[in-house]
Image (cartoon, rainbow, N blue to C red; front, side, top):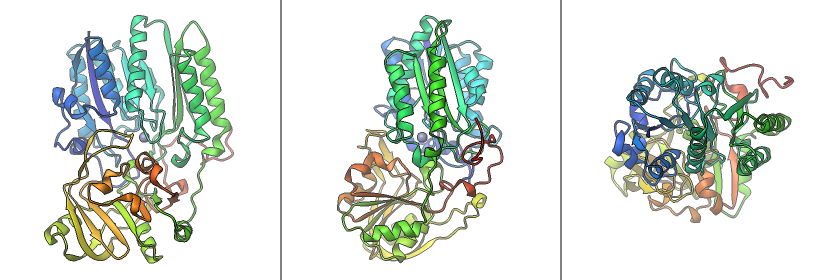
Length: 496
Ligand SMILES: [Zn+2]
């Protein structure tokens, strides 16, 4: 048996400025091009990824493995067609060379210049060269999935956590189900439903209601053998595409009705709880004023309106500016991506005073957000290479790089400025630069949910701060054009 295993992940925020190109898919590996073959296997070794579960299972079954590419880009703007075409070609060429099984580690919310539903397009292209080869796909919890995608996939599973700490396990579930299907391909059937629901990401976590009951029901059904697989996808709401929605997929045996029954049950559960998936942000001034009254830290200020984990430029300075103006002190901030500021502080050298124009360099025309850097005076406290090993339960063990960094120390804050754009989800973002987050009063993190992986346990308080940006929870700001309508809650009175 020969299998083709590939990783191609990008969560596309179609409202984000800029585009995502080929080099963006290699940056996490500290390379210029996404790795291939043994180099790709080596690049992801030991990391909590679905791809590693595929590799482990293939080795266990003594299958021949071919890895045409491992490509992963930080969420961001629309993917350039040239990058998508090149990555797809690498995968399709490997499949065309001949294989018995295909296992893909995909995101599910990738949009390119031409293809709003890039994963469906990838599968369509694979089907041109391999019409009947079984395809197992492991997906992010934020996947937006279309009927066309399901037409081509054989087995589909999704993460059940947010922050995503079950990536390997999701791959394992897909691979194990695939092995079952291989034994008798005519026996199983995959059914799915896309719900007309645009959920708020602050309300999606399967660890909390309303998603908890729904996800727990799916998990129980799969664990008990009631169905072969069951996955619930929160969907990625910041993608203006027809398939953007909460969705559900269940696989069971054709001779029974359990998979259809479970799908119906989960659909009803999701729809009945639709109002609970709505998050109403409070004004950031109000949240920061409350933060000022708290005395015991660390207090996490989660600036979620502009975070790279949901595709934001991650350099909007509004929340930091407001926090400083309100007189908050002992704040640690990580990280503000600004390569120019990093270079400037490296030139200045450690210990020297500087005045810099920080961040705010990425205007977002879709939401009429202007460029607005924050001018700060301070001391260059530390310079680092920005490399550390992840200890949080997400991507555990990965050697991670945020590019070179410089820590700017002012009277009120220590700000880690980095060359790369990354959502902070591990204490290494601070500790590698000599800052102990346990000892700070405020931790200002540009993050919505993933910060919980590394910071939830140490926080005394967690406050969601609604800064402006292309990841805002205020959907009325977004000029949706391609989204299916009606959809809840944009069309509040809709019937389903
Ligand atoms: Zn996700």
